[in-house]
Length: 151
Image (tube, rainbow, N blue to C red):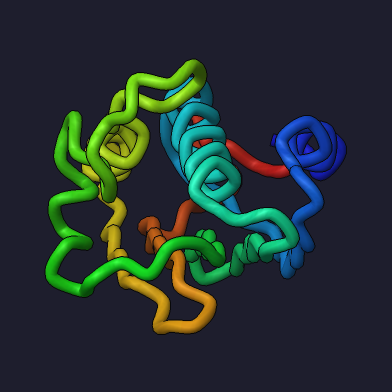
């Protein structure tokens, strides 16, 4: 995903959020479509479960790390692992238009596993709250066929 595509996607999603980017080249070997879904799901989740005027932080590193962090509701550390399970949400469903089904982070976890990435999730402490998701991908040789790289 290019920096321009990322900016366009974030621009469509932001709701008065402060977006902090620390982007270094990150080459990952894998399926471009699935990795695109992974990034979109992480960012959509970070925006949807943020608060007005909150913060979203996105970082990549040449060491194979992708980190997305947001402000939002305070989540109990014991509740974090279940957020990675299908159909699990931090709050009960309210059946309102546009709410998620609780699949975004479980899809992220599945795509990460399929690409040999290690996923860690942690609740951010009060008062900011929110969640930090860090993925550590195997470092890819940019010359290998099928590698996804910045364009």
